[in-house]
Image (cartoon, rainbow over all chains, first blue to last red; front, side, top):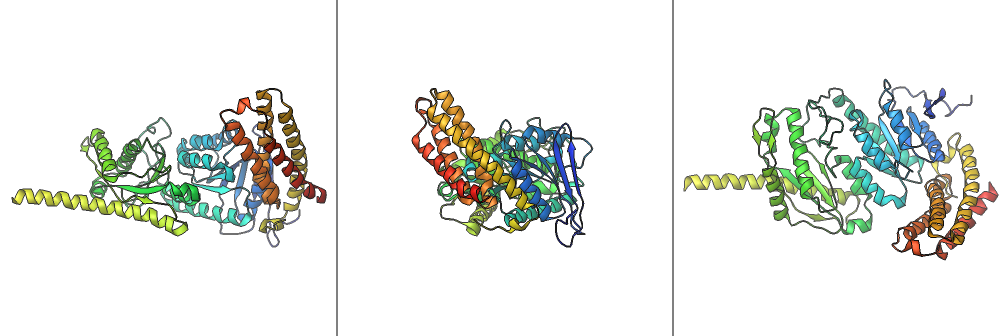
Length: 366
Length: 119
């Protein structure tokens, strides 16, 4: 056999796993110390799958499995006893089951609720890309591909997988299913207060990293009508200090659902960014009237019956920060705008609590 | 032709040759579907032919650029967008195949020619 890369020894295993017709190509390049990611690429264009095979082989010591349809992909994923995939690459436009439907189906599987999903999109797929992020995609890669960009995206995914591995090794869950009957939520055992929590079963709620990637791909015309703002749960430290991991996850998830319902009439995506703060991005020109929206969310929260594991009623309230229009923002300043929305919501939360305490003190001293 | 870092990958030349073979067939099929759409006597016939052309154009739009045929990919993408616009229009089923689409597809076919000749 002719060496794939000069100076490396390798072996290629090429099987046809009938009846699935899945081609598994394992490239074991002699690069000691690198972790092997198991990747599933799904595209109805065989030439794209072959191109991806070449790119993956040249990008590291990874294992690529390919499928030509969403249905075939789900069969491969469902194969029991095999190591779960570390990363998915899904084409968006495919016949029958498109990449958005496939993403939704994969997010419903407990072991892949947080696996990075990179959508493969053409420039014309913007409307599909938005739907893919809403369904739980983590990132996107625009066709036609170029090796350099592909490798750098794969490295980011690799880092995500590495960062998650220590936590996901000690995952627990005390409920049997998600709110929509899907897979149970995956709750990190010791989530840090400042860490974003991924919520996959609430409408239009995506992972924080996916939110950053989503904002980065907004076109100039989309930015024209986009606004970011954030909600922050008041006294989140107190909730965090007295709750178990699962209770805290449930609180974050329940508040996310209330906020999502409150924003239902608008085109939006939101994400938990850590510290009980939810960053929202709206498109379509709508800019919220902050006080009205905060009151609406708090009214909905007061009507929601939230309890901890001991049966005590929880009464979380949120504050809303500054609404920042994204027009004329690019690159780092876009992320700066998101951070500003986040910070201002936390500042508003602190101010509301201080105001409430002052009011209480004044009433008692009067 | 744009040069990419991946051009030097082992096996890429063979894959590019394969793509050129696919492109040759795709180009002929797209032209054939376009003519069928133009000559269609029913709205359903036109829609079916345009949708078939669009499906192939979408694949070429997504892959041609990676093989150095950026202009072919862009032309395919433009045709795809025109077909989408036409088929999504409310009155599409009462209109014949627009000549603009045929002209754009003709441009796509012409752009493929020099690459196919050189292959």
